[in-house]
Length: 68
Image 1 (cartoon, rainbow, N blue to C red):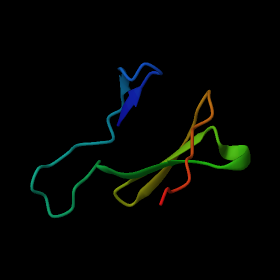
Image 2 (image 1 turned 30 degrees about the vertical axis):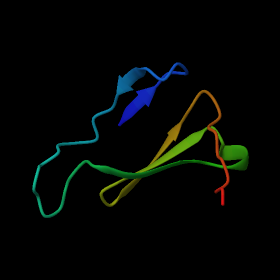
Image 3 (image 1 turned 135 degrees about the horizontal axis):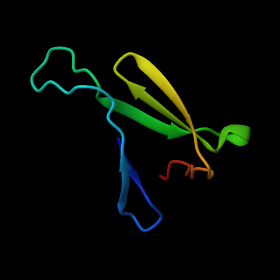
């Protein structure tokens, strides 16, 4: 997972586990990310394979409603 700074530059790279090209069941590939809402707007949720990670952040994430 690549974390960007406010200028859009790569600030940190988190390894989520080994990636095996062509594997029937990939390991370590993030599939979804979202910020929490309300009191948890400074929490990032990430699904990796069959796991869910909850990552507290120092700043609140931005959540935009779907546009038509």
